[in-house]
Image (cartoon, rainbow, N blue to C red; front, side):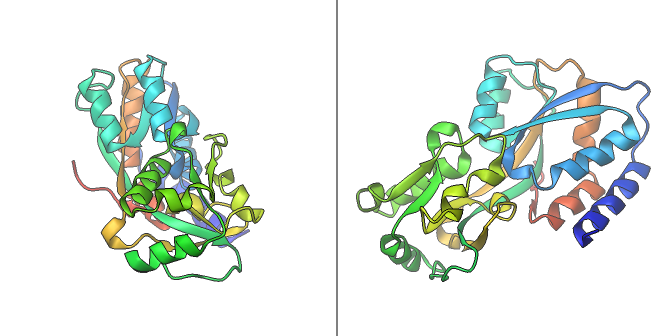
Length: 263
């Protein structure tokens, strides 16, 4: 058994011991940002083990999740970037007072495993590396991807939109499987691909070249909330409380997430 699986098993036992019992089992439907997928299965397992509740999770881009909430789909817990959550709350789509920061996510650049590692440590170096690349990739902003939307904005801000247009490959794969969005990079169709660092580290055949330079970095606060359509708001609150507890916070840090800022 791998060290990660041993740590995960220990986390499930420790976390479950510290969670109060809930009298009757309920099903909690969650729509969760794909950036959390690496850490979430172990956290969900720990919550289910002690509470007896069942958590059904669908992963996807934050923008796409926000649209389902706006349309009134029945969801008990949503986790999306804070700006999207704030808009949903303002529009009355989220139960007042139910939102809380879960973790921070930053953006990086991936390369194929074993490929040369160009310099992206400064903004100037990043620009030179992008211009020198044969092809680059990122998530299509039309998917609702936070990293894709920001990458497009960043390229424009750097004044490289025209130069990179013909050698940019946009990924529009299924948001349920964020670990698969780097397949074109793995196949050698691109040299570099932008993405959430937590998604890069779970992808196959690629490795993290590094984070974006601090001057152009995008820090996203993933925020949980209870949609107004929830059929199990009490169980949903118990789950969110568990997500911000010490065991879950530790598990998120282990998987590369930064602590959330108090809201």
